[in-house]
Amino acid sequence: MKLSKIISSIESYAPLQLQESYDNAGLIIGSSSMDIAKALICFDVTEEVIDQAISIGANLIISHHPIIFGGIKKINGKNYVERIIIKAIKADIALYAAHTNLDNIINGTNMILAQKLGLTNIKTLSPQREMLYKLVVYVPKAYKEKVQKAIFEVGAGHIGNYHNCSFESSGIGTFKALQGAKPFVGKLGEQHHEDEVRLETIFPKHIQSAVVSALNNAHPYEEVAYDIYKTENKIDNIGAGIIGNLSEAEPELEFLNRVKQITNAKGIKYTSLLNRKIKKVAICGGSGAFLISRAKSADADVYITGDIKYHEFFDADRSILLADIGHYESEQFTNSLLLNIIKEKLPTFAVQISDINTNPVNYL
Image 1 (tube, rainbow, N blue to C red):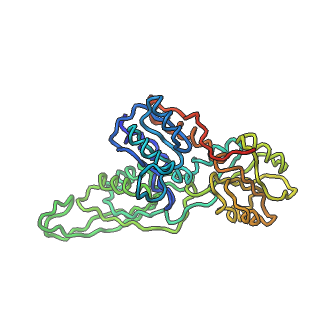
Image 2 (cartoon, rainbow, N blue to C red):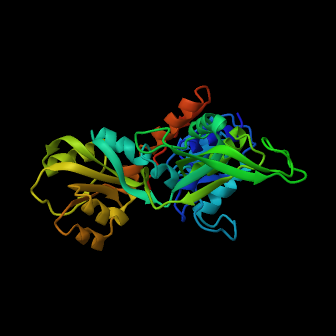
Image 3 (cartoon, one colour):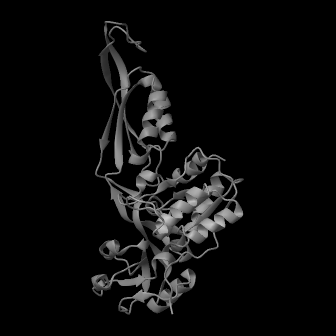
């Protein structure tokens, strides 16, 4: 199977445009035109994972964390990153990562833990802004429904739990076709007036090219008149972290022990108990200390994440229970999520999860 097809199955679920600016998700080593026999899914790419891929005949490794984040000026094998790059290239193994683009969707990295904890009414903790655009297009009345249907089919017009949302108003469009034009209506050299509909709808930034392409293909005019505006609206299903409610409130230690059991965490670092029950739970897998204030303002009773620094624990300020369960522990279910994404789109493709524990942190 072509690597491009596998990539498409992942990025249709978690578009690369949703990754953070510091990230390096996507195809890191290899060509999208490669033929892939089998894929191995892992959390981190290590030399042991490369060895396992070779042993099972996999020439694609799909990881959550990218092996390359910053620029590399030399590849001499002097550190583990350079050694992995050399080993993958020598073995003709492609490396692909789905990282913060998978974190930043509502049904992404954090959702599995939320579901395992039994959360309901799940929402994005910190929705992204400036990701929502408005399309305004002018179309002849007879073609309004065709154009509308085309842009809706590629994802425009979604507002929360409502789809196919738009607004229309009628008016008169004018134009004069000059020499060389092939007007759909009107005659060359004559001013033309046409009954048109002003059609307005919204779409997320990452599908702009698909929306414009669908618009141009469905619209009858040779030159399509349309405008695209950036809005300040937030997108509720795109952003960092999630928050939801337990069906029944739980005592703090009882809840923390349940989290420990579900994640198989060797230990949980947490702030002072507040002697109140846990009902509203905020989660951000990985390094999520940047969302502590957001979890507090959302009135979460507890915030579960990893990599909280010493002084950041003080930010709880006795208004929220902070629980650091570990970076790996909070995101470990990403492997099964990636497997399910690929299997749903490509059910006959050979793909498996690595059985190598790549967590670099050990506990006594």
